[in-house]
Each structure stands twice: as C-alpha cells, then as structure tokens.
Amino acid sequence: MNLRKSNIAKLPQDTFDVLIVGGGINGAVSAAALSAKGAKVALIDKGDFAGSTSSNSSNLAWGGIKYLESFEFGLVNKLCKSRNHLMRHYPSTVQEIRFFTSIQRGFRFSPAFIYMGTLLYWLMGRFFTKMPKYLSCEKIKKMESIINTEHISGGFEYSDAYLHDNDARFVFNFVRSSMSYGCIAANYVGLEHSRKVDGLWLSEVTDQISGEKIEIRSKAIINATGPFVDQINQMNKQTTEHHHVFSKGVHLIVDKITDSHKVLTFFADDGRLFFVIPMGPKTCIGTTDTQVPSPNTQVYEQDREFILSNVNKLLALAKPLTKNDIIAERCGVRPLAIKGSGGKADWVKLSRKHAIDVDKDNHYLSIFGGKLTDCLNVGDEVCELIESFNIPLAYKDYKWYGEPGEAVKREFFHRAKLMGFDELTPASSSEPLSQRFWRRYGRNAINMLESIRENPAMGKLLIENSEYLRVEVEHAANREMITTLDDFLRRRSKIALVVSQQDILQAPGLKEACEILFGDEAEAKLAEYIGTVVNSA
Image (cartoon, rainbow, N blue to C red; front, side, top):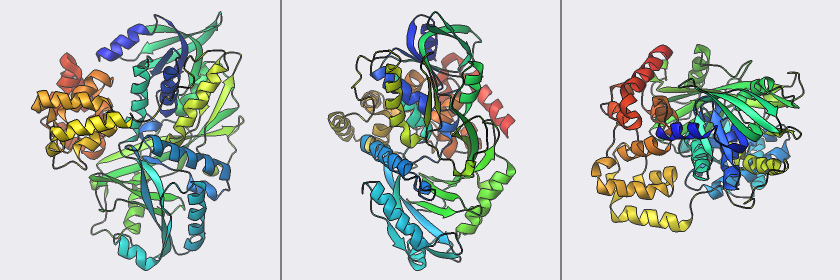
C-alpha cells in the first residue's frame, strides 16, 4: 500500500511527457517501452492493472491460425513473427505447446485439408516450432484416450505458445518493469476528464479508494483503456477512425480432467474453436464467442451450459462435468477494432489486430484491439508515435523487454542449488520452485532466496495448493501494489483460479496473508473480499 500512496502523491508534482490511461496489456507495454527509453511517464487505471480483458484470456500466445480461413495471410505472418519474438525473449514464460486437434465428421473442411493449412502455418512461422503431424482416428484414440472419437474423422497436431503463469501476471510484470525505469504508476485511479490548456493536457483523476481529486499535467495522452477506449474518447471529445465492437469469452476452470500436457482442440457446436487447456493441477475449458453490446458483462447460465455440454460431448469422461465441478470462471470481452462509425461489420470475422489512431495536433493516441501475442509491437509502435509528437526519447534504441541475461539466470540457479531450494517444493506444486521463482521474479528472485536462507519460515506455504510461499506474499506486499485482496488472489497470483472460494476463505493462512499485505487494514480488506464473494454468489 505504501508504494501506491507514494506514487499517487507524485502524480500532481511534475509535468509528464505522457499520461497513459489504462493498465491492461496495451497500457503496460506502452509504459514499459516509453519509460525504458527515457520518457517521463504516468500510468493510471480506474481498477487494478490487467483488471479487465487482460486477465480473462485463454493464456495463449498464438499466431492466428484461424485467420488463414479468411485469407488474412499478412496478419498471420505478423502474428507468427510476434509469437516467435515473445518465445525467444521470454523463454521461461511463453513456451511452445502442442495443440491436439480433432475434426468431427461432417465438418466444413476435411482433416487432410486443414492439416495442409497447419503446414502453411508452420511455414509462415518460419519453422520456429515443431512440425505438424497428421493423425488418424485410431492414432487420436491411442495418444489421447480421453477424446470421444465416435464422431471423429481425423485430426492433426501443431504448435503454438502459452503463458506458463496467468495472463494478468504477465501484464503486471510490464507495469513493474516500467516502475523500475521511473514510471509513476497507480491502480484504482480513475480519469474524470482531460482538457488542453496552453499546450499541456490537464487531466482530473480521482483516487477510487480515498476519493481524493488530483490533476495530472502531461504533454501527451495515450488512451489504452481496452474495451473502454470509446467511452474515454467521448469524454475527452476525441473523434477517431476506429471504434470497438465486443465479443464475450467465457472459460470455466475445473479439477484436472486429463494428464495431457497438450491443448486439446475441437470445434464446438457453433463451429468455433473450443479448447481444453492444461493449467497445472487444473483444467481450463472454453471458450464462448458471443457478441455483446457493452464491455460490462458476466457469466450467464447459458454460457456454462454451452461449455459443459460441449466438453461432455467431446471427451469420454468417466463422469460428466456439472456446475458443481466449476472452481472458477473467467469472463471478459474481446475488443474488436472496426473502421467507421457504424457497427455493420461481420463481427465474427473480425480479427484481434490492433490499430492506433493518432491526433497529432493534440498529442493524443487511442489504441484499439490488440492481444497479448502482439504486445511488443504495440510498445515499439507507441514509442515511434510519441517521438513524432516532438517528445524526445533519450535512449530510443534501448531494448525494453525480455528476461534478464544468462549471467543473472546462472547466478540464481547456482544459489538455488547451493541451498537445496527445490527440496522445499511443496507436494502440491506443479513444478520445481526454482523454475517458478525465476519465471515470476527474474533477478528479484535472488533476493528472495536470501530471505528464505535467513528465515526458513519464508519458504512455507500460507494457503494450501496455492503455489505461493510466504516470501512471495511479502514481495507482493512491498513491490506489487496490492490494493485489494482480489488483486493478489486473482491477478498477481492465480490462487483464486485454482483454489475454490470456500477453500480460500477457510484457509488458516489467509488472515496471515492479509496481515502481510495490508498491515493494520488487514481485517477491513478481508471483510471487503468476503463481502464481494458473498454478493457474487
């Protein structure tokens, strides 16, 4: 909490080169890139960082194979390059995974024809991943016996990538990186309006926790509010070439239903892609693809029924999944960018490609669409556009992304081996501690090792099955701007995605975690979270 209060106090004290509104993936990479290259940046979000679309994805970084059907070869080429770029620079986080795809009899294309498409996809991906394989129905049953092959005519296996931790964690690491480069970032700070006075933007914002009004001065504004871009632009009297339409995506998380480490891929009853995604000790199933008029949406009974009906039909489960098996739900909208003021476009065929509208006279950018796969390109593009506003970037060639270098990595793993760190791995963990710590914390993991060495209690689990040690909670309290308990349970970690709400609330270590995170406010923050859980039930 001290980090947030300190940053909020700094917001009115200076004139920033850029104010970024929105802390999802587009705002996070913009902040990280600009700060690293020398710009003076402020970043605010009305809720938590990655609190909307960026925390409700499939956790996949893929090259857009489905866009081959609509002949968008340029987009697929670009997304494949972006995926490879992410995998190359975040090898611990963005990793190759096989997509094991089954095609039902009577589908609009034969398995052999789609398999030829996967070869083209592999070619456009510059052979960066393993080669696709064609699969007969017999081979599918032999390799993945859980698949119901009664109506399967064949299939194939190809590669894309996935985020080993949750999407929100990936996004926050860009926010944390931006702060390390000098960005003043604060969550739960909402924009009321902005106006241009004497060449500067004056933005009135409100601290959503205290109610305090603050004025932020900046030379430029980036509207990176994801599905809320149009609302912010209307408020700021900005006219843009693009606007958004919305597709709702829902995923359900259940206990692990298969030992497969592959993404089982099908086409659902509505003809769209349907995934069974490994998630450590759990399985994530979905998604839906439903047009909605507003970015504010929720999971409805028909969403659950659609997903459960399809997974029970597509898999040969010993016992059908029911609503009682659902541990957590993810629901968000995909903001799809379209040109013009009307909404007549065929939204089902719209892609997730991003577009940045530029008001050069007023130094104002609006970022539409986009997805995790393309995030590094967004950061670089934003930097070029800010420079075009005559806002200099002193270190324009500085590389702002990627995991720490090999020397730092070797040092961490050497220290981890010396202290027998992996021997402390809880039985419920899906991977050795050293791998998890390096992926989540990079160079900061070295200091965390020292904390455990000095105080072995730091290496203990606070919440059973959470894959979070006490030292990680301490780190989150000091460096990750945890403002509500949900920030920690749902976005900095994925505890709320893999542990049921009932088990979380009954966990003996929950109160202690709150005390670490919030100090004197622990009881109030716990009561606030319990109230939210009760109201959403």
